[in-house]
Length: 600
Ligand code: ASP
Image (cartoon, rainbow, N blue to C red; front, side, top):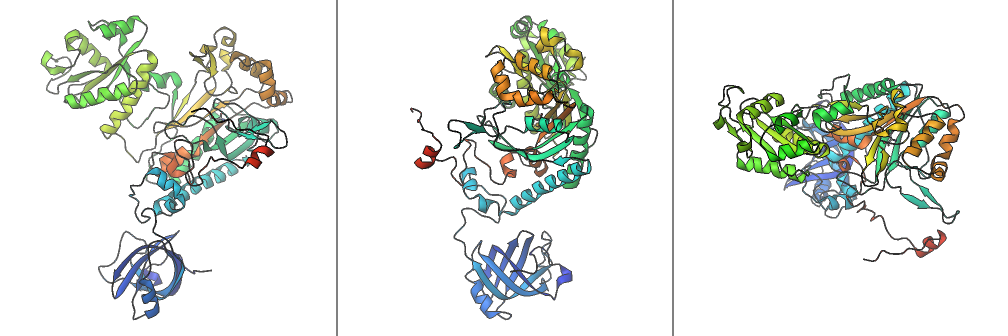
């Protein structure tokens, strides 16, 4: 071994011992006679001091050291001088008085500072030099956190009788809503494998195989247009259980995720059981199926009341079947023009035509006592005092509050208000960074109506089972069918989804028919699953839960690329390997592929 001690280990109690450490030069300060370096390895930092009195050759050599050189140092652990201790460092009470120094390797000047976590470097440069970026202590911490999370998953699920099974990466296209990544076959000219969007069919097949409890930390590939913070490949905790109901599956996740939060973020607050909301309730109260439960400001529908005013927008929306909804921003009744203009812009960027606000002056004694000059609103001329009071009571506003209202189609109103609600919470600093608020959203509709294609699409995927009491609507009104499917949400992000699956061939076929698959498509893509269902398939259900998002939340990071060792950019490009890339003509020939470039 090049070292007998890790940099982060020495303490007061080590004073006097002679040790050898090895690592990277994190920082160097040359005081002429004394040269200090902070030496870094995976365990932390240790201050090393080169004093010619104790090692003349080592001191001379230390003059040439630069950031990120790799060195081995032998010396004696000594106490730091009084006043020179560093309470922020675990090794801050001591330093290594060097007697020997070996330079194991040099480094050219790093592309950015490794010794600061506050780096202002563009994302591309960080990814191009990811091997350097990952050296930063912060990134090392994140890698360890990610490892710890998966370790807890392995432990917990093993205790619960789950078996980890690896499923193939080269499979057949198993559409789950996204576009597949495909891999050409050399030995079967003209044929392609697809990379799994998730191991969905495979884990269901494992249930037919009698595994009963399967899990895998699985890589999933989706060739989607990358919206903010998506990656072409992401990692999922994928699991499936036989002989279970919805509650049984949820219980596994509640116990596991509570344990993960407790063990990785001891100071966080996570209380079980997780909040449960039906999809309908979530849309009604928060305008979204990904509600952030860390703050209030719930939405209220005021369509009827608003429509009794003289405001044409309100009348028009109400009579065309749309809705008028809003929420109250507490204590914002004193917002000036700039602030309300700003919020209007924000609402417009989410698709709203406009934002109606009604500011209530705090000097009013109560809502009942509101007078004309207590109210500021661009629609004031069209809203009688009575209507405003009624709206304020329905929305739960008090003097000093700001009512934010949007009118339009249900879908638009919900999108705008849910975005605005999150934005207001940020502006009002309502989010406690220590809080981790999980919620289950369940009872989703089984199908969404696709306006463009004029057909039903599965809301989640086509393997989820309809609720028993809704079977009859499959023939008459599929849009009404609620599925036994659910999402886990945390702090306003979707963490994963799951369902009780269909395990009956006829029912599964019926669903394929409803979403318009032809007989050929059914047998081509799903033949194996349907066949398996005819050999005694047990009732089963499970979930796929995003690992990247979970670790990002635990790490306090916004973007999942911060917690993926080698992520890709927004345009699905890997700046480190410069992938994707051209391949050799010979490779194309072997694969029987001719490339036709798009005309630009
Ligand atoms: N396969 C699903 C997905 O990736 C999750 C599940 O239903 O288990 O979204």
